[in-house]
Amino acid sequence: MSILFESTRLKNMTLSNRFVRSATYDGLSDPTGRVTDRQISLIDDLAAGGVGLIVTAITYVHPSGQVSSFMNSIADDACIPGLQKLARTAHQRGARIAVQLYHGGREARFVKTRGQLPAGPSVITCDPFYRWNYREMTEEEIQVVVHAFGQAARRAREAGFDAVQIHGAHGYLFSQFLSPFTNQREDKWGGSLENRLRLHTEVYQAIRRETGADYPVLIKLGVEDGFTGGLTIAEGIQAALMLADAGYDALEISSGVRGEKYEGTEYKTKILKPSREGYFRKWARDIKQKIGVPVIAVGGLKSVAMMEEMVRRGEADFVSLCRPLISEPDLIRSWNADPGKKPRCLYCNQCLEAVHRGIPLYCVAFSKKEQAASESSAAKRRSKSGGNS
Ligand SMILES: Cc1cc2nc3c(=O)[nH]c(=O)nc-3n(C[C@H](O)[C@H](O)[C@H](O)COP(=O)(O)O)c2cc1C
Image (cartoon, rainbow, N blue to C red; front, side, top):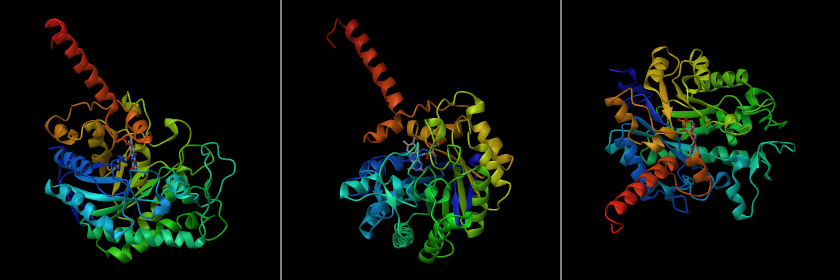
């Protein structure tokens, strides 16, 4: 049997296999951030489809971190009953589930609807990749956010989630603090790498205080920014080592503050030949070689043979997928039956563009194809029946 399908452990969690559904924003919450039936059905599909560990969508821990209207909240206790249903749904199918704890920092543009400006570590006046207004966080605001992460993790545990994952990548709050480009503070939160990681370590401690020693606390870490002059991979690797030392139980290795076009982001396109697959593989491998805690690889993973090789060679412990599972939530089960199956995902990012326009998550490319196919078969039926069907 493939090593990918062997049952394995992560901290105190037993996972049925090594496949992770990487966190995926779905635009499906209700307007107050509560879990909806469509989200329960999505988690049910993924769990039934064989994913070992499902990471939810970004879920804001404090209203100051909200980035869009239809995203989930874990910012107050009233969210717990809905989240409980989500966790129970995964468990009923034998999957494990982690909630992704999120704060958007300067990217939290939704707060403007409440008449406020989003805030990040520093205001960068000349930023070619970011053009919206925001302000600098005060010391007090940082402490409020640290506390909010602790409370959010307590709620996650109460709701029955098996783990939490901090969103420490893709240009959101933790990436903004880690990047020397977006963090130009001169207090204890900026400057040295240790200072730029203070948010990550204080949040970790706040979570531990609330959830106890045995609860799995994961982080998705952006280890290089998508442009020259930002976080370098050398510092990103160093940051990964420091967070493993700080106590994080697993690191999912991705990219940091976004640069230009899709190529400067976490969701690269044109994954058309093996050399484009697994585009963050090298980073995961370099980090895995240096740390004792599990590493989760993500980014353009689409062939079982490559993922198997990565795990066998000790380049990663887990493999994480997002876009292929949007298109085929039962992909893992299909791979178990036929490891040679090619995922149908085109990595075209039309799903992403749709959620950015406020449309709930779906595979745009294939629903267009399916629509076209059903229209053409309807047209054939019409012409055969003389236009009466
Ligand atoms: C529609 C969409 C939503 C996403 N939402 C999240 C999210 O909520 N949190 C996160 O960490 N990454 C998010 N990502 C990034 C993915 O988790 C993943 O890191 C990236 O797509 C690369 O993996 P893939 O090649 O398997 O898609 C999202 C990506 C897409 C396409």
